[in-house]
Image (tube, rainbow, N blue to C red; front, side, top):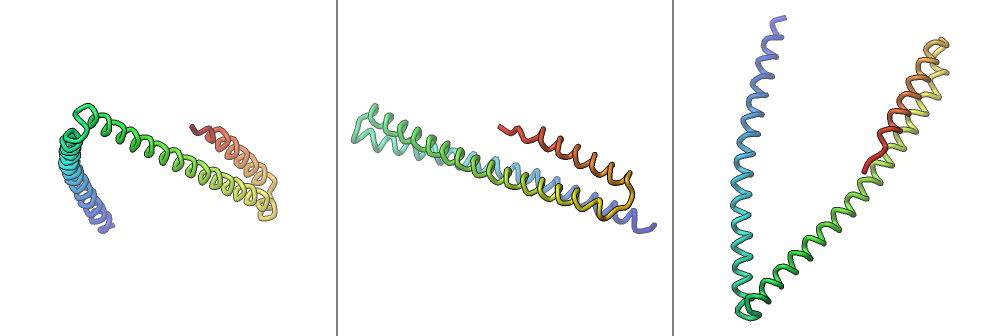
Length: 139
């Protein structure tokens, strides 16, 4: 019984430390984001000035805009491919889970001799299949 207060104390210290580290990391990430954002904008301004010497102001703005549209479109394509890969993985995982559940339910009657337990397990399995079937509708 003496170890219970010690365990709570250690857990609360760890929790306080975790919260403190999380706050520190959020502040640092925000500061780093501002620094990188400023550098990005300065780089775009420098690119615009350089291109305006060769293409004029309008041409430089168009080149930068088209470049950003191309980068954005490329990132959208990458995101679409990654989403499709994730959907395939989750479909395989759900199929494997269904197979494992079906195997477990099919073996259960051999492990038990009581009809009530078998009926309860069958109802539980059906409820699980129904719940998983309703949750498959991902967008």
